[in-house]
Image 1: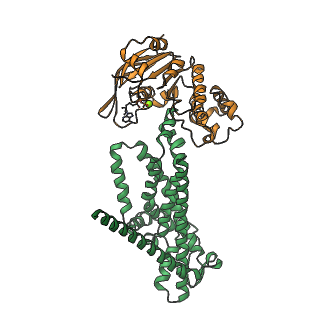
Image 2: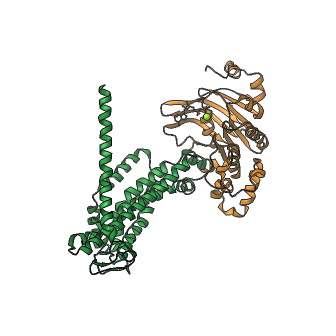
Image 3: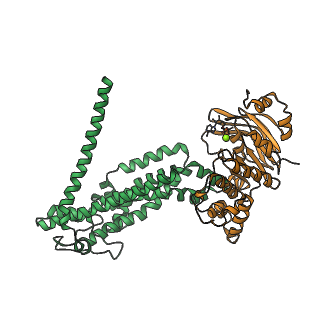
Length: 281
Length: 253
Ligand SMILES: Nc1ncnc2c1ncn2[C@@H]1O[C@H](COP(=O)(O)OP(=O)(O)OP(=O)(O)O)[C@@H](O)[C@H]1O
Ligand SMILES: [Mg+2]
């Protein structure tokens, strides 16, 4: 009897929390959809913004976001891959726990700290200034733990028989990495990268004043120039706009950003689904 | 003739538990040696000491000496990957990479002899013929090897191991997951390959050992009970435990 009661309470608690979480998400998404949709049209997506966002579109903001996270991905992926391979294949068993701890610690650092440190190191010390490259470096460090952990999990989930089959043929450790480990975990790696980049695409604080400006820039002509980004655009418009058109445009930009992030997450989920499918064969 | 492998007083531990107990054994060149014994006896473990595949298992520890020709395998100087190029291995379940048949045969070769590219298609043909798979797959070499049957996949694994041109082939119950026809094909193959190649095969099927082995090693609970010519062991075993095992498939050691 008491056991039944406990179970009912537990079950209801699960339902209530799930419903709360889902409806919160639903409310936020529909708010963005309702307010952003009126702004969206082809012109909005394909032209530059005019009059401080009151008119025109968000073409260069979108491109700026892509440039920032694209470069962050290019910078973070090889480092994450290299250290994931090192941690899973070379590092002695006794040190692996410590390595994991460090990675999780890195993941727990507030993003504003990355922004501050990144700006001091890349912007000031390496003299890159307020530029998209500084921003990409900061984002790269930020997503490194996410990407690293995903790649590590992908490597660790390779069936042991593949490693044994490779080793039994006389492959060296280095050949094993190239012939078995990387090809067999590539799906997981891409998934991890997409997840990391989806996170970077939403990041605002760390790049706001280190990599982006609000207006007056199109595409960067050199490493040293800032870009403008969706995140910056939304924040500034939302803070300063009195004009209702500018506010609608901010919601439009938010909708585009959310769609972008959801697409990346969806992509990573789809890729993950194909791997489990393969593993079950 | 000098034996190819010599084990001298080999004991093997995984952490606290001792899996092999003071095993001394020689394995002859060009012969088929079959390792038999009940489940958990340590058959796979012995086999895997010959190409050092146990090294990665946590808690692994070995005492005694294992010689391959004159090389002490568990010396620090041994290049394990070179050893494994000479001592190939086929596992119980065929392990096929999600690639084409052609690429699976070349999986080891490609990384070991990348300079011999012009010989690749010849290597594929020769090794697939050696495992009697050529006629079945010659028209679909570029199709995924995952579409082959289990028996074909196992022969493909053997072809992949042979392509590296090993001197020894270790086989760990290679037919236990196969149908009778594929089993026969592989038993016939073992007979044909021996001579040039030294084969050590673990099996729990006594009729299979009888059919294909020149020498038989019987182990039980990590101890070597009896080792000798196949006909002697099967017709006239010297140890009581061997007699019991051959008769009842059980042993008290
Ligand atoms: N990875 C491992 N870690 C710890 N113990 C192991 C490991 N592999 C095998 N053992 C132990 O070593 C002993 C011998 O195992 P082994 O696989 O060599 O037996 P086997 O004779 O091949 O048996 P089977 O016929 O079932 O394949 C067993 O008691 C097993 O529990
Ligand atoms: Mg076994």
